[in-house]
Image (cartoon, rainbow, N blue to C red; front, side, top):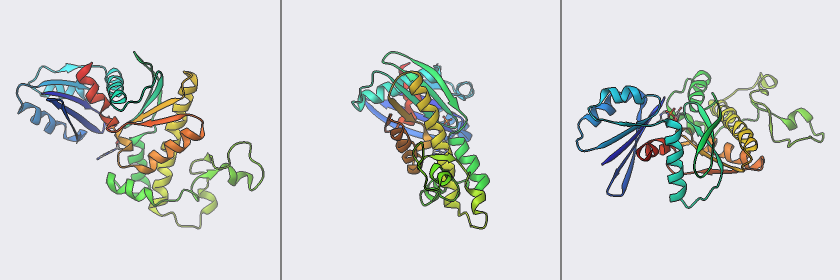
Amino acid sequence: MKIGIDAGGTLIKVVTELNNERTYQKWLATDIDQVADWLNQLDDVEVSITGGKAQYLDSCIKHQAKRSIEFDATYKGIQIFLKENNIDLETYIFSNVGTGTSIHYATTDHQERAGGTGAGGGMIQGLSYLLTQISDYDELVQTALNGDRDKIDLKVKHIYKGDNTPISGELTAANFGHVLQHMNDAFPNADRLAAVMGIVGETVTTVSIHAARQYNTENVVFIGSSFVKNELLKNIVVDYTILRGLKPYFIENGEFSGALGSIYC
Ligand code: ADP
């Protein structure tokens, strides 16, 4: 049995392969010692580890683990998933929206890091908690779905007030920039959380688009657990990428790219 592990800042992703069957599992990073206990109960396994907490996990297990560089493992995993999904891309940007966001340029034979931003899944969780006191992940992504950003985010059309706009009036001019014009209104948690998804989704997309322009590609592959169950974030990223003239791609189980790729690095 082969086990590939991406021990990340928030979640530990585990891919197991046995007889051409693949399984996917996740643990909270805070439960890393439980992952080590589970691994230590297994014999005859080939363990591969990548990610920021790889060193620690490696030090807790009895197996001689293979270690790989996270960016290369992620690229390898994406290439495998793209092939399995019959998505044929010569060049693309991949944006890994994990706790933070890391952005890479990829061709058919290599990847290079193109940039990143601190806006990502960690910001979603932290800012959401500050604004709503909701810390449960499922609750916050569900609540955000019913939100309305109109009183929180300032759009270009709000500034131009009916005049012709030089760019689409629907674009966000200032995330959270409409709040002070609605000081006497209530801001339900759903609206606050939708605005959090807005700032993270738009920031991640903007940085990805700049990278795509810089490397002259039109394809952007988005991965990372931040999109898991988070339909609103996904929609914001898809709509904004298309609006800016590029092609967004999401791959099923994309957040396991690093774990899968570590097996084949
Ligand atoms: P990392 O490798 O840095 O841990 P991930 O790609 O696993 O990054 O993404 C982490 C993000 O995924 C979190 O910040 C959060 O927004 C989101 N997430 C998805 N599912 C969960 C969950 N069950 N618990 C906590 N965060 C989750």
